[in-house]
Length: 331
Ligand code: HEM
Ligand SMILES: *[C@@H]1O[C@H](CO)[C@@H](O)[C@H](O)[C@H]1NC(C)=O
Ligand SMILES: *[C@@H]1O[C@H](CO)[C@@H](O)[C@H](O)[C@H]1NC(C)=O
Ligand SMILES: *[C@@H]1O[C@H](CO)[C@@H](O)[C@H](O)[C@H]1NC(C)=O
Ligand SMILES: CC(=O)N[C@H]1CO[C@H](CO)[C@@H](O)[C@@H]1O
Image 1 (cartoon, helix red, strand yellow):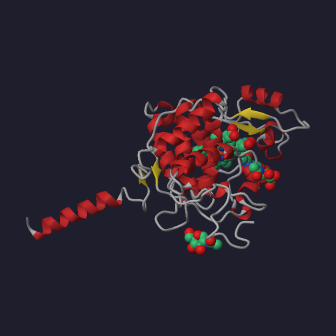
Image 2 (tube, protein in one colour):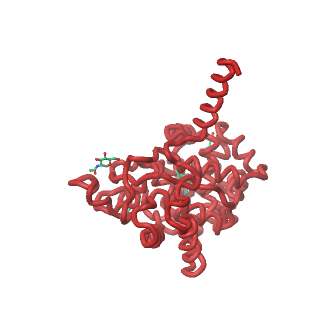
Image 3 (cartoon, protein in one colour):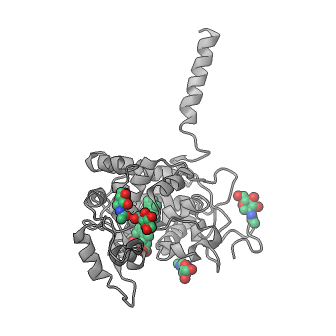
C-alpha cells in the first residue's frame, strides 16, 4: 500500500469516527460498570412502576419538558434539579415543570446498586426515553456519559416564550447546534401534556392588541379554548397541547397544527411560516416519524454536556456534592 493510500485510509477513519464522537457521550456508557446490574433496566423499572402502579400517566409530558428545560439552560447537566432559593427551578418558565420526585426515586435505586456511578443528567435522558415508550412512542437508544453541573441560577434561565417568532426560535435552537428540522421535531414534544390558559389567552380575545382572536387559530379550537379559558377567570385553567391524542406520543400534533389547531402561538406558526411549513408537511407524511423524533431527542441530549473529568456525579440530584459546592454558587 502506498503512503498516499495509507494516509487516505487514516483520514477516512478519522472522519468516520469524529462524526460519532461527543466527548465521552455514547450509547451504553454504563454497560458493565455496575456489576451485573443493568443500569438502564433499573431506570426503566422505576419509570414503569410509576406509570402502571402509581398511575402517573403523564410522566412523558413531565419528563420531556424537564429535559428540554434542563438542556436549554446551561446544557444537559441536571442543573434544573438543584434545589435552592434562587436556582433554575424557581424561575418563572419552570412554573409547572414536574417529575422531580420520579428522578429522585430513580436516583435512590441507582445509588443503592452502584454508589456515585450514574449522573442525574443521564437519568433524565434515560427516563424520558422510557416514558415516551410507555406513552405510545418508540424506543430510541440514548447516549450516556454526562456529568452533573454545579451551577443553577434562576437568572440564567432564558427560555423561549410561547409567542416567540419562528425565526427567533430557529436562531435560539441554532445556538444549541440544532437545525430547524430538529426544532420542528422537538416541538413535536407538544404531542403530550398541557398548557395553562395564561400562556395563550391573548390569542383568544385580544391578539396583538387587535381586540379580536388570532385569525390563524381555527374557529373550532377558538370555541373550545374560550370555554376552557373564559375572559377574566379567577383561576388558570389548562388545555391539552395536542387536541386529538393528548396522552400519546405520536405525530397527530403535526396534523392538528396544519388544521389551525395549535394551542401555543409558536406551535401554530411552525405550520404556517415559510421557514418551517415544508418541514411540518413532510413530518405529517413521514412513516418514519418515530425514528426521527428519537434522533432529535438524542441531539437535544447532546447540548453543552459535561463529560469525562468535567462536573461531577451528584449523590443526590437536588444538591451538589460537598467538595465542589461553595458559598453562593446556587443559593
Ligand atoms: C420554542 C420552543 C418552546 C416553547 C416556546 C415552549 C413553550 C411551552 C409552554 C408555554 C408550555 C406550557 C407550560 C404550562 O402551561 O405549564 C409548554 C409545555 C410543554 N412543553 Fe414546551 N416549549 C418549547 C419547546 C419544547 C420542547 C423542545 C419540548 C420537548 C422536546 C417541549 C415539551 C413540552 C411538554 C411535554 C409540555 C407539557 C408539560 C406538561 O404537561 O406538564 N417543549 N411548552
Ligand atoms: C402586531 O401588530 C403590529 C402593530 O400593529 C404589527 O406591525 C405586527 O405585524 C402585528 N403582528 C402580528 C403577528 O400580527
Ligand atoms: C398568520 O400566519 C401567517 C404565516 O406565518 C403570518 O404571516 C400572519 O401574520 C399571521 N396572522 C396574524 C394576524 O398573526
Ligand atoms: C464546579 O465544577 C467545575 C467543573 O465543572 C469546577 O471547575 C468548579 O470548581 C466547580 N465549582 C465549585 C464551586 O464547586
Ligand atoms: C417547582 C418550583 O420550584 N417551582 C417554582 C418556579 O418558579 C416560581 C416563580 O418564581 C416559583 O414560585 C415556584 O416555586
